Image: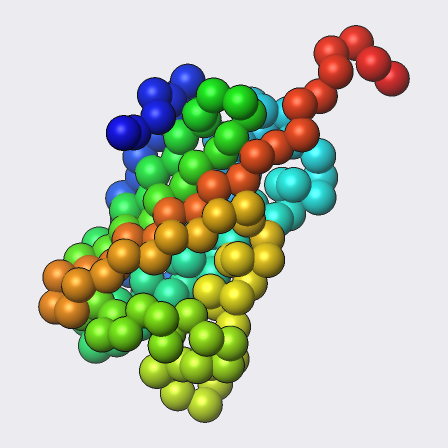
Length: 149
């Protein structure tokens, strides 16, 4: 059963590397309404960067496709971010999530999923070869006490 969102937004953009920074900033701006700490905001931005970069580099290696990012504010101060593409998909998700594994060539570290896992509370990756990948990240933010100094 899907949790009802308090607020949400969806953003769709071409899989150009110049849009990674846009997605990262848009996620941070949307999350700002939850009054996150600077560390929480940096965690969110880093995880989004990794997820979007994976979609750009791996889903559409020889073409430009669409990347969709949906961000939801859920009850209990939980932020959910879904980055989805309709690219080539991941044949073996378990293998792809191993540290240092990459299909992106020597210039790629193979640490994208590991980084996402370390900065978010929960990471779920679903993929179908030839149909695309969906990366869902969830992070519970610390509630801030209003009026405290």
